[in-house]
Length: 276
Length: 246
Image 1 (cartoon, rainbow over the protein chains, first blue to last red):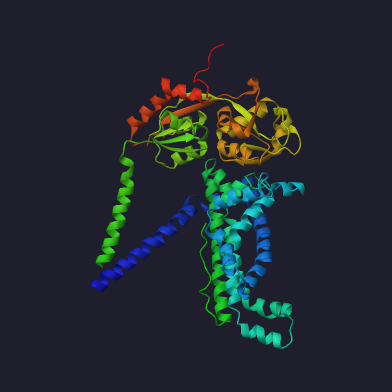
Image 2 (image 1 turned 60 degrees about the horizontal axis):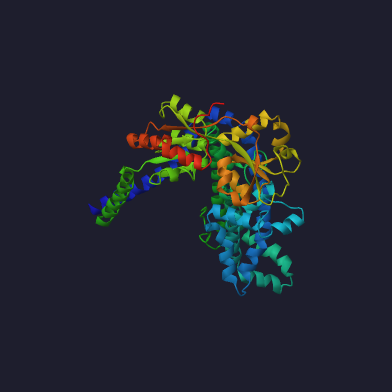
């Protein structure tokens, strides 16, 4: 009898949590008819925001992969003083409130910021430009990639690397022929998460880059600015972001199963949280 | 099992107490961002939510628990009134627009006409924000829209965001109310908008229809319209609610 009660309670709690998570998502899609939803998406505000979001996200992810991969490799494979500090540092933006990130970026790269005079001497003024959006997205999204990349590199069997080296293969070639192929699933999974987080960036962007249609107004900023002007358009953009997120999450699951079938190591070490 | 039941009870108790917290006489006032400093001076005991009037109106429309709505224009409360979402709005104060530039004046601006100069970083409020539409009105009145609007680098969500971006020195100039410019006077320099180009900036106040504290809300409105409230507003640089004749 007690067992039945426990099972019922567990089932109820699970049902409540799932319904709670599902309801806002469903509400976005049933708010209007699919036909109207699509017609809302053809407005200039939405198109511009989509282009800005896509462009800034792609550039940001290129930067994240370009700088994040070597950083993660060094942290994963080298033991150096201050290593745990470095690990904490690359993870910090993950738990930092985006508004704090925005203030920090302004204080560092703003015209009156720490590097403001140096940047302006070079003729660079970041705030209110598309580059500022890229900087904000890179700052908040990079930890998700770097974290996953560190775990992926740590997961590469050192014996295989050693074998490659004893066969006379150069470290660079070993990295590209042995380490990278073994870590690729983990890196791709990290990239998917980082992309999703970057696409949703709001707080740091609005503070550091401002909001101007076709220049700095990303999809989340456009949703906020349309919220009081045209709720239906805001909902339509929300639905688009939900679809993109679902696609990213599904590809993430596929990547992780690809990784667990292609390597003998467990995939549970990937942090899946996208807080912020 | 018993532990589970206890947990459920605690959760219910916490939810209930959270819901009960609003039953005190304190009311919730949704007010335009430009009123951030002056409203708590008029009545420091209420709960305030300051923001772009348009955002606040949208929230009220979505059922936000506001008792009073004080907007930086008459259009938004009038629209709520027409949808039976608040009482008939009355004008409680007026304001005028100015241009603020950082004290260091990086773009070396000396009049509104300098905003036409190429490369000036101008920040204004978004299209739905009252101060944003007043700004467009001014530029239209002065026939400057086509030459100045290309210099806009950001459209902010409320007037205080515009003010902050200029006070931080990130933007070269921004359009705000004269009362906002006074709040951060140490970091700002003010350029005038000619009187003939000024839009009609009237602030409207109403009691939200969904309010559960109607009489307290009405008392608050009375306080704002009353002698002391009006004196506070004028002391903060707002204009008297009716335009003096002549």
